[in-house]
Length: 426
Image 1 (cartoon, rainbow, N blue to C red):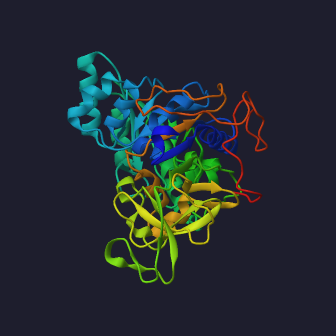
Image 2 (image 1 turned 60 degrees about the vertical axis):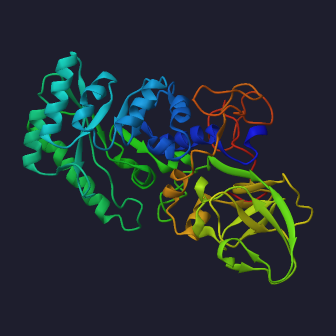
Image 3 (image 1 turned 45 degrees about the vertical axis):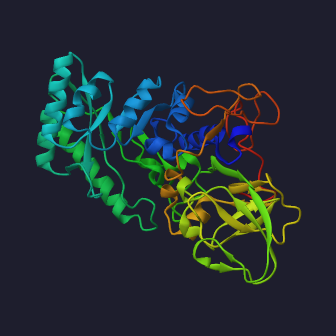
């Protein structure tokens, strides 16, 4: 890996493509997918993931959280529709219109301002009406009064009410009653608008949990977020409904190995003291990279296919692990922080539980100083620098060149996102 010996995140774009295909199979025909790539693709890289789906016909476009994220994608050459799920502020309306960014709209004042900005540029403002059916965040209330306002907005010149969407607050929970109520409110709003001679082309309710547990609520667009990256929204969704493959591995290398005597304190505060003579390895990663300090004395890494537990406090840039029972650990040996080695696996979900973090949060917080190294579906073998404004050193999926049929129902032409972890399912 050369320049990436300290640490790198390996992102398997083949796994991302596979996960999207599985979710599309789940919802069937009649709806298109939206790839949610906010927060730099949940830490996986928004531009490479958007590039992956630019020529995929069943992917309508992308969703982000901010206008800045959307503009960054446009400037990187992304051409499909981009929807900002959060607030676009008044001073951004002109830029939004210029780049043909779709905006979530939830007040008449927002729609008016966007239409006025579009008029100045002789362009169209594309509006996606947000309905609050129970999230309690942003959105028009689900009411007749709101339907009156939305019907008026739909007639604005220089604006197109292209979509209407809501967001499920509890779709990832075992009890589905609240989600059913949210969907009922959304349908009532659709009917109320039809009574006002207003038909909005793109309706959207399903998030990742909705795709898995409520495929019948697909409407015209569904939004694939955490599931796109191979993680389930929670342990309460039906994991048997959609098979997902983790897309991210976090790899480092041993920077030092030493022997310590009984009674030797390790790291800040001496929260771990060696109970016997031990061999200790240093890993050059820390909370400055997004590896949580709360994994102190809790976490583990994989070295030579075995678990090496974290000793003492995680520092900003380094932490120590116990390699006493792992023979022949040396400087530069690979340390897998997330991923597989032999028959062992450390998942994002495991580290999230141990550290007291949410798994969405964990991947989003992986630091910018961690290079992202991408493996691509298909293409030719060998390293390739990809034009995403990221460090060079991107690799392609190893093994053989050319298309490979996978046993997961994925179309041929995608390469395997890595070998399985021994004989166990991941």
